[in-house]
Amino acid sequence: MTPLALLEPLTSQGKTVNFYTMKETNPGTGFAFHWSYIGLPVAILLLTLILTAFFYPRLPAEVAYRFQPDGSPDNWLGRDTIVLWTLLPQFLLTLVAGGTAGGITILTARFIQPESTWTNPGRITSLMGNMVALPQSILLFAMLDIFSYNSYRIHLLPLWVFALIVLVVGGIILGIFFFQAVRQFWITSKE
Figure 1 (cartoon, helix red, strand yellow):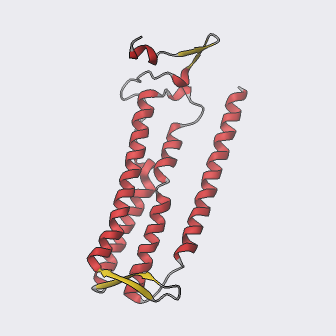
Figure 2 (spheres, rainbow, N blue to C red):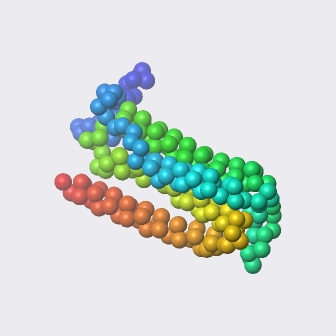
Figure 3 (cartoon, rainbow, N blue to C red):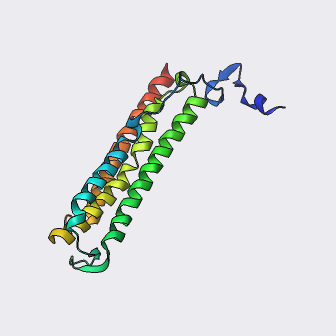
């Protein structure tokens, strides 16, 4: 048996199961990458760059980055080091979002025929690519808190409260998406 024979449609009781076929689609006619698939991570990265450029001249040479429960500084780093450690994760998470969305786009265009799926692959790709914005927004808030304290001696909301808010909102959005997907599955399976 040749490897290509494994890619032929599987049959079950005389019906073709299209989901498991891995036929290559024609290039340029299938699923394509859209910047909206990673719009939120890119927007948060740009906002991080803008805020860093704004706060950098206002930061002292030694920046407090860790605080005790009463809000007093606990650990210090150099200004350039703290800027590097705030920008590097944002760049990496944006690359992860782009790689995830790009990889899913390539795999979907190559192996899945859009008419054979019961849900829109673009919505799933957009959700997966933009989901990286959740940890990015928490990192952005932590950076903003560090910069505002060192520039103006003002603490924002505690980080754990902000993280909880982001996770609850993200959970609600995922719940809505899951409910819509289950509803779409029910509608499709009844037809």
